[in-house]
Image 1 (cartoon, rainbow, N blue to C red):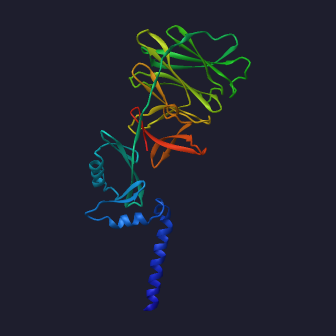
Image 2: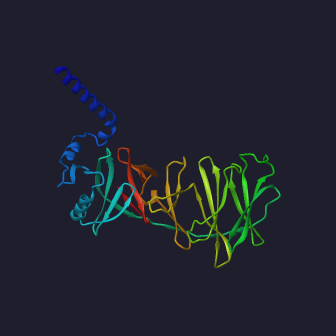
Amino acid sequence: MKTKKIYLLLIIVFILLSLFLFNKDVIFQEGNPVSVLKGIIQLNGTSTFVRIKDNPITYVTKTGNSEELFNYIKKEYNVVFKEQMGSGHIFEGSEKSVILTSKQYTRFYQIWEYSELNIISLKFSAIMAEDLKEGLPNENLRYEKSISLENLFNQEEVVIDLYFEKSQEESFESNAVYAFLQYNNKVYELGTVSNYGLEDLKVEAVDRTFDGKNEIEIVGELGATYIEMKLIGYNEETKELVNLLTMGTPEYIDLDHDGTDELIGVSAGIVPGYVNIYRWNGKHFEMAEISKVTKSLYSGLENKNDTLYIVTGNYDENNKMIFRYFIYKSGKIFEQ
């Protein structure tokens, strides 16, 4: 009988040890798990959330049972729930804005970290459209191919002609590519659109101004770490083609999780890193420089806990890089 009890005890110890080993990363994700485990023990029918830390202020709830915690936050800090962005739940009031950021602690519990938000309104600078310049290929260029785009600008066809220099090898991957645009019996010079041949050059009709009308987007590599985009549109007032935007290293990312991608420019190996946010205001594009607005040496993007953050960095008095994290929404960035 005694031997059976020993075997049973060993089995229980083995099971507990196995569970610990397989879940140790989760158990220790908050550092010392004692405060978390104490909070979990205190959770019951009358207490659906427990404060487990003071710095930063942190709570624990059962998974999917955060309503009473939210109500407490609203009453305690005189705020109302505004929206969810990734794992962050934003509350706003007349005097402050706060965020509760959730992390899963095993599949049964959630950890909620509270922090007040520093909100910065981005200053967007106007980027005015420029008229395209008419021009024909010179005698030093060799025609390579044409790309036809239909249903653009009064439903007329637009043709993009691509040229190499005659001195370059035919179809060589490092050749510079020059573009000319044919429209309405006119030829416009677009300049260099790639320095690495045709393979990665993209020319397509897309609606980047969200007005139901397509523009011409040309994207090509001009350097080892630099990609350039040209966006060609149509001016309804002057009836002329215009360059709406020329920018470096474009990315289309849903920064604010609203289902619509933002147009951003990011560094791709260029030091220091940068993030520029572009938007269309109905007449022209505007740009906000994150590093400039936050007075930072560096800015970039980082995905943490399924939330995309804008990260900035500056050196402190000890020459140590200090990072700040922001969430973007509607022309503002919210510091976490």
